[in-house]
Amino acid sequence: MAKAEPLPEGWAWATLGDVAEVRLGRQRSPKHAQGDQMRTYIRAANVGWTGLRLDDVKKMNFTDDEADVYRLRPGDIVLNEASGSASEVGKPALWSGEIKDCCFQNTLLRVRLDGGEPRYFLRYLWHVAADGGFASATRGVGIHHLGAAKLQSWPVLVPPLAEQRRIAAALDTRMARLDVVDRAVGQARKDLSALRKAVLLEAIPDQSEWPPTWQTTTTGEAGTVELGRARHPDWHDGPKLRPYLRVANVFEDRINTTDVKSMDFSGVFSKYRLEPGDILLNEGQSPHLVGRPAMYRGIPEGVAFTNSLLRFRAHPDVLPGWALLVFRRHLHAGRFMREVRITTNLAHLSGARLKNVEFPVPPLDEQRKLIHRTKHRLAALARIEGNLDRTASNNSSLRRALLTHAFAGHLIPQDPAKDEPAEDLLKRIRVERETAETERKAARRAARAVKNTRGKQSAADSPPPPPHRESTSPSGEQTTLPLEFSS
Image 1 (spheres, rainbow, N blue to C red):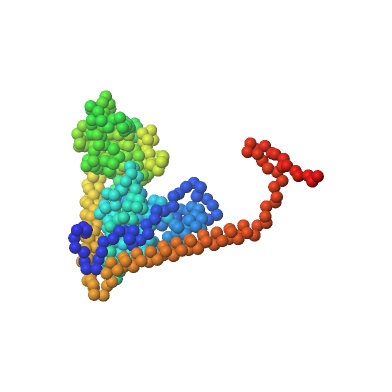
Image 2 (tube, helix red, strand yellow):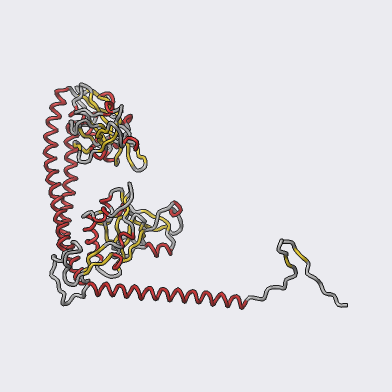
């Protein structure tokens, strides 16, 4: 809803800072990794689009004073402050006291309302995040940050408090129905993945069950394995700019060409140029996606590949379609995961390790038959997956439309005659904050006065200093005091 549009009666625009305290979590440090006051804390990994994920929570040392600042309370909203993906920044979740004495880390922002219904503001912030509002406001390269100041100044629509509660209740009921659909789709995807694995394992069983007509060899003997070219800033411009594929372009049995980069391949393009039938595998990825394969089929033309990918080019006795089938089988069977090495949170499948992975080579006629039969079975599963994708997309569109309807004031009946206007709520929050600040200042002045009084009383009660018997010259040398004698 744009600011320029008329607001429903009793509603008002405000900033999030007008209705809530916004605070960045406590920074993690090696010195906090141990201590005698270890407390649980949550981080960005514990906040998902569907709520909190508390199966993996960490601990670090918080003093009592620090815990008072960073402790979560029921009704707090936590949002992702930072992420490697801008679209993940700002996704929120409501804290309901799931873990006793729990704090939060600086990959999260805490929103603690001074007035207002937490469930309403949770839905509002979720809507902003899902529509990409927070993503467009992030800063940083590699890791995207939102920042407490940016979130605090974020504009929010504030209905009357009673209406906030009615909107939240109505959304809870309607969203619960959409959640049922999402869970059903999620379960169907798991079942589909199991079916796909079963089809691939039936086509290519474990090595101990290979027919005697199949040749037992390795990937390195069945074809050539090469790593792509490393990227370098010096090659972003040059006389021989060529398109290249990277890990972000390669999905299982599919190459996405919507975002293809280019760099200079002067003198080396022929080495890295892809030919139709080449199989590309993810060299660096999350562990369960390492080795994810796709066949290059000539689109886009004249394209190379980078070192986030491995290229397999089959020998004459191996059909490219068979190689793709073998690698998909290994992916779903977890075979590649046994070969990965993890560095800086990224799993890698080196060319040397891929070369040693077992590779069956049936006679060419049998390869063709197995490719044809398996292709049809997998195509049927792909159609089911397409239906699930459409269902999930429609459900997401319904969710966003419902939220848009709610925040335009059209979801539930309004009652301006009974509901306190939002402006009165905002005014009351301002007065309560000013009163609290006045009381805090008075308490600080009183504490300083007591401290000063005690200091003066302590000085008055102290015994006088002993008489000086010697003095020191400006140069630091000791001098003798003159003595008086009576005559």
